[in-house]
Length: 383
Image (tube, rainbow, N blue to C red; front, side, top):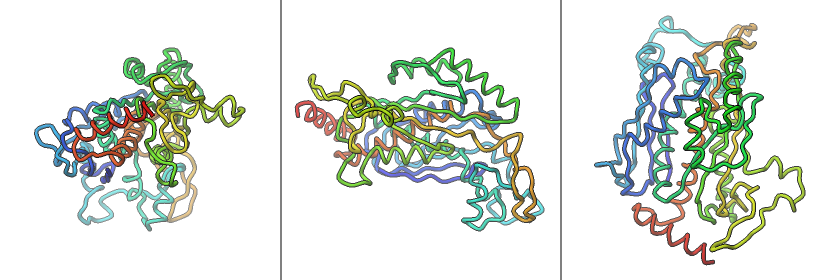
């Protein structure tokens, strides 16, 4: 399984092509649109979300609500494109007819991307590097989630921290996330922390500033042995780490209780093995991974998200032509994307887990994949 995305933030559309989804998977646009709606929500989002109502179109690879086994093409139209006709024109136009961006934002891809690709208009960089691209990855992730759901594997994400406010949560399950996260404006399971997080966002917005935080992703019912120890590039936790780090504004990723494990004795952090109608662990400090492979425990991944780089009280920068000190440019933006980032992180994790499973088992047809997975689970249970 593999996929590619294309499209600019204010271009006509975002596009994805997915290859390798088994034939016979139930798939409709509404299944994907449910995920896109979550991405657009969350306390701290900006005015762009008032313009867009993201809806996916499936234009290949599906017939009568089921996948064909051929490449699936997904598109999301950018409604705001109608307001950017000349600026985002594909055809050549006179430079006097649109604004050229010359002052990069600290913390963004603007300057380095322009240096790398030789652009003198920073919009050539910011359009593709924008987090708007995550909309189409959420769509791809929604397809991957349907594969996992058919295999009785569930994915969920919730917010652990925004700014200086942290949640106090003892036990988390995907079911608990699905039932309770929707009740919180910031998708946090701690009611008191949720209110404090909203207040933090309000303060940041009043100052023209932005906030980051931490999101946790859980994946339940993945059997042991997905991934491999035999080669570095086959380790599933490494692939998931790379996918999480590829999401805009993510600056760190760790699994399970990695922060605790780094400062405790081994006897306190290694997950002791037991057997009760199958192998299990007394604890899950390693977040479901050993040796680059799943060990049968829930996968637990944390992503550390920086404050987004567009500030309405802009920081100092340099004009790329005059080299004079100027305030960095302002693009319409959000105050905090942490709540919305949860569904993006669910998507990229789901993609990696689904890809690993599809690559591991017979998967031309969904019925074959389900049968192969069931047989493998029984093998693991009896080993």
